[in-house]
Length: 217
Image (tube, rainbow, N blue to C red; front, top):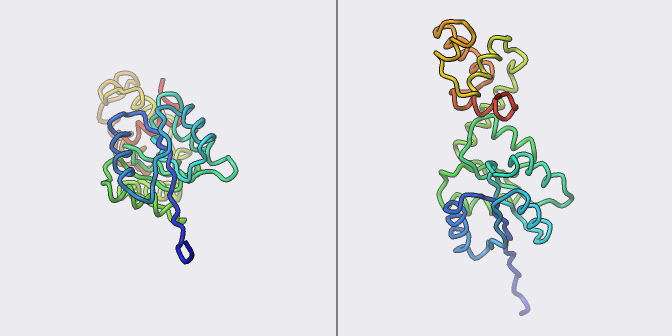
């Protein structure tokens, strides 16, 4: 009809292996008139196939997939001409994960603690060229930026690297001390130093960062 403005429906592909989480996202977006979930995948390989066939506007991507690291999949998507905008949707919000995702081409980063409104708003915002970040992801990104502005892994001593690798292997401070023939107090000292140098806030973040670098045994 003349004078009517055609509305655009944002087409979304969801790549998420957790069935409950996937169903929740599908339900939220399915109630939104201007957003349509056109495909769902539980693996990275299936996700790539769906993206190739369906040409979505937005991909909501978990980075903890069973067959491929989500960051590697993000790089594959971002390298394609006319690629979909990718919103990372993850439990991880440490600086290393958020910073690496944004560097690899993510258009936004949400933690799985966000509510329905924030999820819908993020899809709409990426279509407007904005970069939605959940509060935790924003904090993680600031941490990554601070880490980049200060000495990082290059400043770690050999002993700190050994301790970091031992953390990634799941060892306690006492176990690290016995393995490296140092006191538990000295282990705590090295952990404190490496966290500061890497711009991290906890052992969990240090373990995640080590795994991303392939440092575990």
